[in-house]
Image (tube, rainbow over all chains, first blue to last red; front, top):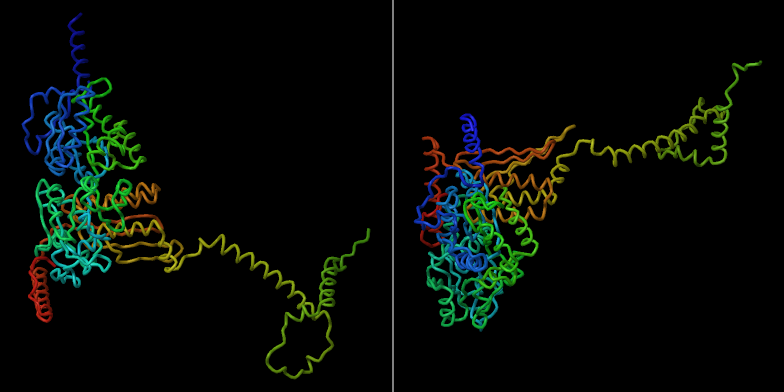
Length: 370
Length: 248
């Protein structure tokens, strides 16, 4: 081979190198928070999952299946919450960034923009179902036909008398709030501020109620309105419990007077119906059907987001092994269906139509387009 | 060959004969064209008291035919105007505003309400090319929970209404969300024009604005007055003044 031919050969190889799979990812900035990752991660054989604490059990269950069936090594699972998880996920692409983020809410438009700004342009979004909270009482208590507004009027610190005029909440009995409610003392058990369930309650229940109360709705500033909306009464009628929250609720309810209500994960409530009575909200009794079709309002969606740039292609060329298997596993009917193993852990599956849509889009590696 | 240049055409004679026979057969029909006057009949003058010739009655018979003809043409024109050409006639402001009270428009208004915007003004231009636009003003900022709620509403709406018009409306909502959530600007007013061509104008203002000296003084004065009024109000109601926790 002549000297000229050698030069051409080298030039051709150099020209095609960047197009071999994902072997040369675009330069990415450092993650917003440095995490010490094990050396195995940088071999591309270990998946890296970050995100919501609530999603931990579901992620572990899926990874266990993958370890058993697909012979994959254990994944790195870090729980930092949805918001911090998405920040790290969107910090860029590469082995030093997560492959998957688990969210207990939908990805916000601003977060998607932030991802795109950092080069994370192609994201596959997989809905695995919903999580719901229930309002429960003691088994021997009466029925409480609650609404969001009646709940708010029972537990808020101040109630509106007029626009820009709030007075301390003087309601003492449930009947003071709504004549259809029992004549028992108002008492409510809720999670402490540090637990994720508290934020869920504030976002979905309290702010949901405030959207229906004109005097609060007319407060212009979001910060001022939310502050007014989520302030709870401090006269001893609100009992805040810490972890293990679910067990503490059952113990506390057993010794509490009638009229004490508690907010707990619906899964836990349905498992302990011998002690607990699940109350309706806005005329809807929470169950699998009303949560799946989103008729029941006290729910939140659960998602996995996956970086497409990290997935190995059909020729097995790419950054991280196992992501294709993960997507397949997380869309199986035996995983996310009504009788799937995630349902046994507390996930309420989506409608069959929605599941089919999600499965089709995910298996085709269709990315978020909004 | 004999040519009768001055002969009366046969068809004119035929028409006259028909008119005469109509009058002869059915005089009430002809009389009905000239109903009796309600006022007292004036005395007959000498000129009027002339022998009546049927020729003088011809115009009445012609009137009969004319009236039937014009009535027919009027009916045809009215039908055409009401059913075919009505879209060419400029609408009234009332018909324009009522035309938007449809499901899609209501849904857009509801979503804009959830997005913190309220209808402030309606503009109508009445003319050959009518104009119709709605101006929305921001009445509240949204919290993160509000944005999530709004996005879930948009997704639900997207699934239920996949049409082009609904898609355009969703774009409006998504643009408002995107602008308000990112950056230092917010959509202060939103003008949605439906006629003659769909068009949306976003008026954006900075979220944080430093007031000028004059405006700042005015604002402080307003706040002082409001605090005083509130204190007086609370005193009258026999309770302690509320804490100053919220900005107004």
